[in-house]
Length: 70
Image (cartoon, rainbow, N blue to C red; front, top):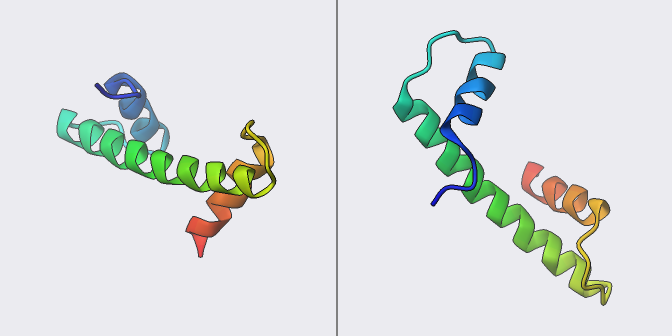
């Protein structure tokens, strides 16, 4: 089951500037965001563990995102 609703994906695409969105586009964006989110979360967990922390903090997410921007 998906973590995000298709209506949320539809709204994201519409907010980006397009009024017409196919269901396939919303499904694909959902899959991409879910996959990317999992990778970012894994990297954030790794960074927290390096600091011997169990709690993932905002700084870990931001640092993980920077890794994917390279």
